[in-house]
Image: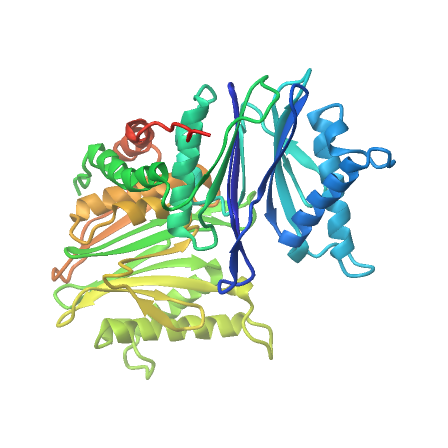
Length: 246
Length: 246
């Protein structure tokens, strides 16, 4: 499977993605699911994918090919006037790719399905975060739903729900995502290291730092080992359970 | 859906189950999924169910009816010589019920499926914990897999994986399960309060305390509210993230 999270914060956007792809549990590979494009001073886009790899890679390839040939009548990924229009273009392209792979005369099979998290900022607008569905439509993050997860989202959700705050620093958000990913990786074989991190700072209009964490990365090891101890300490501090009087 | 957990500990067994049943999100009810039987001094059994309610209730009704009429040739739930034979009887009964509801001439539909967690102790044996599948077969907990979850198990798993220890007290195990359930309930509508707790102490051969927690229960509120604070403190204690030098 996959695990990707995009967080919308006051100070920017933070994206994290695992890199495991599998065709059965005996056929796993590492592939990046986090891609960025940037026109410094004008726009920054980050796209994370889940689902059928052929579908999501084809969608990205089509978006990039069309971007390289601006004379074509097809719209280009990097020339959209807004994040909304960018999400719309990606959704349409995804839907188009899925319709190729569907059997002739039928609707798209869910087996070739895919979905995306898109985040970024275009000059004149604010940073925005979208979840794009295989049907081509999409929803946007806001104060009530400030993050999106795709893939194997359940294991890592409770820590996000309890710890996220919109005014977190970008570094704390990266730390939070590492905890959420580590919880998922410890529970589910279909999500695997290494992990890709991409940070975007509001109004910078340029890619922030990108980093990869594998099992040898010292900070990842600190988080992974330290979190078990921290959780145990937190658990011990909760008041002890005493059965109600019968 | 459902969330049930059974824990095998040195000092006994701890069981917890939610009580939500639903036929669509606009049709929810409270129903207990945790049942116990006991012949004090001889045996104690606890059974928790997930899946189609008609299937699991029928299974339990059949087991109880057959137990009430010992003259019948059918074997009785409370007269099995071992926990293994008890699990086998329950598995066979479950499989029988599923086969009733399957369409004529076909294998059982997964829509009428169900599964159980069975735990208990029979005089002369040790406490044992089983997970029983709709196919009628079952697996047993041991030192390497000391707990079973059925239903919506993903949200509440990371805290179990990190905090469980076989030498925990029964009260700490009850506290741990409350944290795991609270994390699940906060993330998923299909698991709901109240929660049933059942404790069994090794070699007591009698039911330990049973308790129900709803949203007004003071200890449940302490755990639910305290855990968010504890998690935040635990998170703050992890070392801060500093991006690698480029």
